[in-house]
Image (tube, rainbow, N blue to C red; front, side):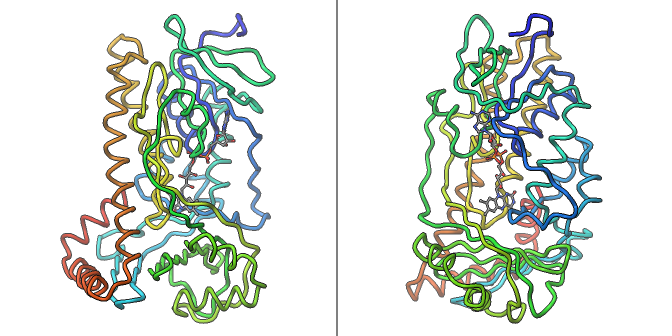
Length: 393
Ligand SMILES: Cc1cc2nc3c(=O)[nH]c(=O)nc-3n(C[C@H](O)[C@H](O)[C@H](O)COP(=O)(O)OP(=O)(O)OC[C@H]3O[C@@H](n4cnc5c(N)ncnc54)[C@H](O)[C@@H]3O)c2cc1C
């Protein structure tokens, strides 16, 4: 530890979108924060092709990013507002249609590149007084004498009052804290690519549920759509191996040619899908944040939105603990964050999981039931409004 530096309140391990937002938010509350990131983040440049990983950001997340001072630069750089969300079931033909105008809003959310959000947050850290340590892999940690001491690869150990673990879904630090996860492997991969379509996307997020998994077409600012196509592992591998013409044809069929023929595609990438919720979100002098705490199926587009809600809750709970004059990592303070965010995160994760299970039904009577349920939700405006408000955060 460097004796000349004032002692740290909080060390955040992992500078992805959620860790960086967490560090920024805590620094803006007046905490002395260090952010430790193993890899130098990829720079975002306006001239670069759009990042294949995009997220649907809810209004509550945009508000938080605005409070952190980065939303305006993100919006000015490249975002695509979506004003409508149209979901339909391949088997029953039933549909759910959410329109921003019906909710009295200009948009339901924004499609944004992951890399852009992470980059803007990363670049705002210095001005907020966050000590960025990168590359710095946190190899381990130990709670000792009222502090947590971090063991860093190729750097001196560092100590803080609290460690925020934000090292992603495969979190090694969560494992080291002895925190188990509950969930299941979907044995699915999300295939992603940007495609040009025959018809305009109309600022709409389209999602078709097929027996194999959901296919989403998300509107991009340049008129193309970003696909997120969840498929069983084997099928995903086969689709990834298709040549471009065959891939475009397959995407067209999977989306029922809703936007006409698929005219062109970028190279593709894929991500394994797991439902995972940590059994505890806090332990001695550490808390979990973002994907380290929960990973959810992308069908509802809520993973990062959940992580940003963790950020807001953590900053609020720690701010209250500090203002009360106590130890910010006192068990009761950490328990308050853990209780609130674990119950909200688990409810959402299992709700998305239930949707995934319901749409996997293929038996005839169950299909009819699913169609009936969807039509009922679509017809019941108050229930639809509740669902829409929840998705908006
Ligand atoms: C196909 C797909 C579509 C999605 N769509 C949406 C969507 O529409 N809306 C939405 O809200 N969410 C969506 N998500 C989820 C969203 O992408 C994630 O929830 C979010 O990116 C998680 O961010 P994170 O910072 O928690 O984790 P990560 O992005 O995984 O960041 C973890 C960071 O920790 C660093 N790290 C790891 N180990 C260490 C260590 N020991 N020491 C230091 N640093 C370390 C890593 O280098 C990395 O930078 C989607 C996910 C997928 C796969």
